Length: 64
Image (cartoon, rainbow, N blue to C red; front, side, top):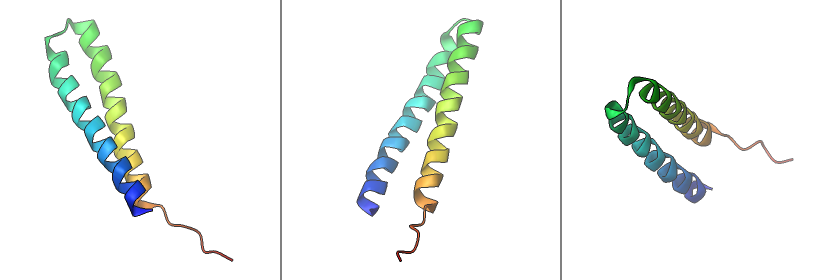
């Protein structure tokens, strides 16, 4: 299970890095496009961090 968590975590960290790079890239866009791009990038970043938190705090229910 930890291998799966690690692979998903690496993917989420790469996705977060792409979001940060996109945030910097969006600085050169016109204002309406910049606001839209940064909104989408911020949502993606928040979801990535939330997913990482959910993956690593998940506890398997006790087996009966």
